[in-house]
Image (cartoon, rainbow, N blue to C red; front, side, top):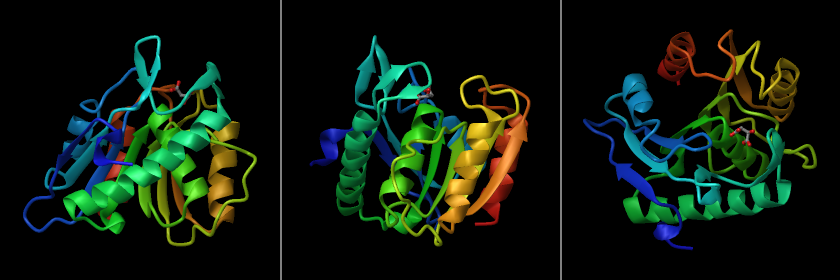
Length: 205
Ligand code: MLT
C-alpha cells in the first residue's frame, strides 16, 4: 500500500520538536479540520493529517457504519489494517519513527484511533481520543502497557454514553494502558476546557 492510500497533509516538526500529531477528523470533516487544534496544543509539532476514505453521502469517514452509533465492525477492521499499513509507508517516506506519533482523533477519527490500539500495540504509543466509542467488543486487547491515552468525554454525550466511555477506559486500563479521562458537559462537542485538559496531559508526555 502506498503513501497515496490516504489523502493527507504532512509537515515536519520544527525547532528540534519530535512530536508528529496524527490527526483523524470526525464524520463529514477532512484533513484540514484538526490542524488549528493541533497548533493550539503544540505549535512546533509536525502534522500528519488524514482524510477518511469512506464516503457516506458526501461525508468523509474512516470506516462505514450501519446506523448512527452502530459501527460496521468488518469495515472498521479492514480500514484499521489499511491505516496501520499507511502509517508504516508514511514513516518510511517521511523518515519518522512511529513513537513520535501522538494521535488526535475526534469522534469517528477517535474510534479508528482506538481501533488501531485494539489491533496493534506497536503503532501508537500516545493519543488523545476525543469522544470515542468502544470500537469493538470481539477482540482480546494486546498488551498496552506502553501506551498513554487521554479520553475526552461528555457526561451528556448523546452519541457516546458515559457508560460506554467508562467501558472503553476500563478495557484500555485492563490491557495496561495509562488512561486519563476528562468529563465535560458539552455533549459530543469539543470544548475549550477539554482542549485545555488535553494540552496539560500532552505537556506531561
Ligand atoms: C462513528 O460512527 O464513528 C460514531 O458514531 C461517531 C460519528 O458519528 O462519527
